[in-house]
Image (tube, rainbow, N blue to C red):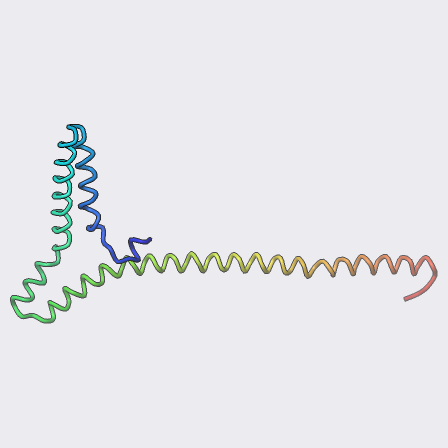
Length: 142
């Protein structure tokens, strides 16, 4: 959730992930192997991150070279929409979750209020029956 709301992409995590895996694998060869594996892993992760980040660069360069402002704006909007789409889905899911829990709390509160308000009705009914029984035994009418 924090990743989606902070605006970071998964590509930012490729170099550290590569360094971790490379260092862990290289540790079989000792400290020098671990350092070399981490360096190699970081390089591979950084390369993959650059490839992922620059996938839309070809469209942008093509639009710039032709002077096509419409295509340039469309390419930038496409990139913005991709980054915003994940954020919107995360926020929408959170709003739905909060709304659901609020409705559950309101239902529980309504059940408690109805239960509390029903208690005096039952007490009054019981007392009325007792009073009527006493009145009948003493010969008094309503």
